[in-house]
Length: 189
Image (tube, rainbow, N blue to C red; front, side):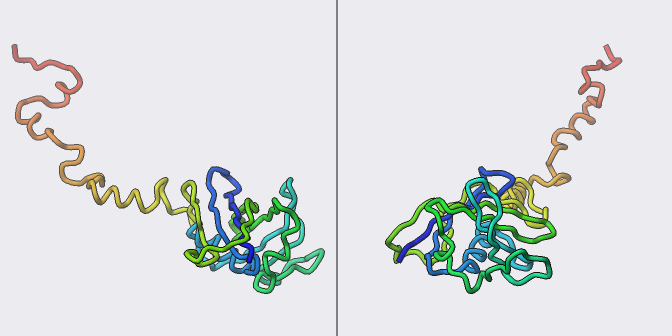
């Protein structure tokens, strides 16, 4: 059974991508679910794939559902469309759009085909992650939850006792106020 390996690029930054492995008999619905999982997105929104060419032009649509919009050609449905039936090229490309309001776009490219599946992998599977995923709702910092963990580990929250005020009381007791810090001199000689 053929195993397809796709690279899913975040459209706005191609240094952010996920590689996923999926059997050719599995459906676009399963590919949709593994993409969301790999980018840590929820599954509450509409989604669609478009078959694409090398210039990333949108072709035939493979949709999660029939949406209330005009179609030139009725879309295929993700749950009933095996991925293998839409592979027309050894470097087949798809465009994946999630959440039509936020319009998250991902470029999906077939990067390899293997004839043998691994018994150690439960397909579909994320096999490589590169770069920090964008935050679906705009709440992640540059390092997401990792930054919060660092703040807790090193007690970096502003206003925490001992943070940024070390030595202030000693300076005041010695008469070394702001003048001393600014390079000023005391009136006493």
